[in-house]
Image (cartoon, helix red, strand yellow):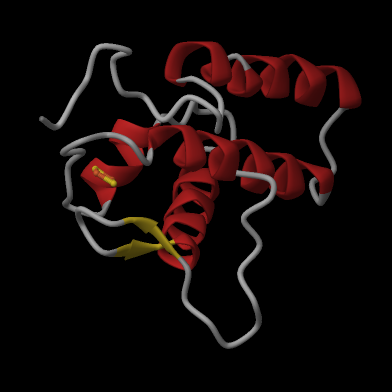
Length: 114
Ligand code: FES
């Protein structure tokens, strides 16, 4: 979620079901990229690495935005060729179509609590 910027010293929850902060997700993504910078990271992989699992999955669009942001920043610091990075980041950004944007929280349109 691009608009979700945590304030210094605060811990912003990204997943209320599992009580996971944005910083924990960011660090997990960096750890995964350190192991393989070219892997396609999806929310399920992040949560599996953290030994968590999606419950309502309403946080996945925000996790996708975090994956995109952290991956872009990670590769911006690398020395790899620009063509390779653009191609890889296009794949990462395509996750938005799969998991929805921040305006669609991953729930079915007919999802009702009552
Ligand atoms: S808010 Fe993350 S699984 Fe429900």
